[in-house]
Image (cartoon, rainbow, N blue to C red; front, side, top):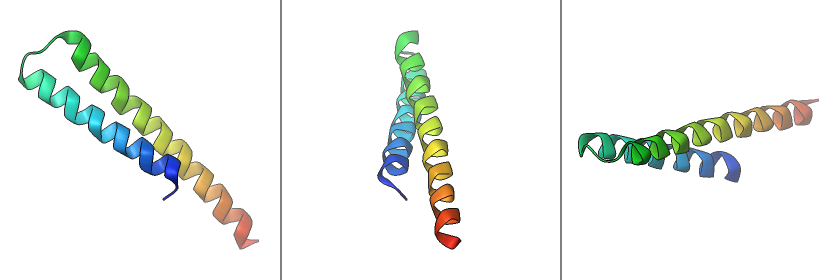
Length: 62
């Protein structure tokens, strides 16, 4: 995995954990929204990183 994909996955998982813990603790809605935003950013970065890795692999196969 590339650094971008690894970092994005880490941010996404931390966001998921933050959202779950904040929801269980009945925390502020803003904290839950921050967790979901981190999760969305992590997912988007991981998808972009995976697409870049596939493009790089396709070019090296030729």
